[in-house]
Length: 256
Image 1 (cartoon, rainbow, N blue to C red):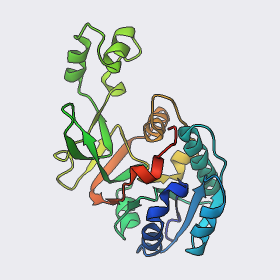
Image 2: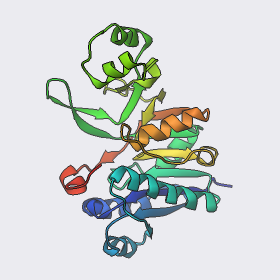
Image 3: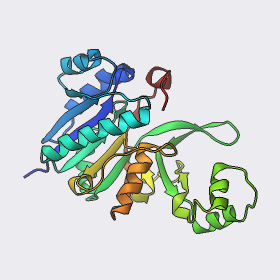
């Protein structure tokens, strides 16, 4: 018997620019036994109606003052539908991420409780130069942490947290993966990766809710909470998704 998969994500009217591409792709995935559910936290139900016209199930969610809280609440609605529906895996697939058609089969073959596919964005380095990098992060090494500990002046937020004792080990500091890290196809353990494309087992979701914090994105918080329950986070670098980024349309005027 095939494992039962639920595909879903929070969404809102700011993602309308990529709705048709997303709807087309999720309905043409090669894996057989899956359902699709979007959780719409738009201000009105107009966007939900557009989603339903394209043949995708959608439920409405409330909107809070902070986007972080709204997204976490929406993810937990999806989590509860997953648990009630007796699914085996949740494929967290955000609406601006377009995966390969065999995404489910490939990630299931990895046999991990939490495994992500790669998607990319532009990030500026210390010199203001934009570079393409994956949304995946690892801990700094013990050697790098010792160097940071040796800096005895208040500069960056990380240095201040080390000096104050809020950060006590390398696992508390993340470093973004570069293209060199993911150039070859492999399964690699990471500190955290994006919920934009992540396969999560029932075992995890029975123990871990989605939460938020002022100093942490929901992807990082989910990975942190999962590790506390004994789970590890992986990325499969051979899984590469298209990322339909449009920050101006998506987040303009929204406090994250």
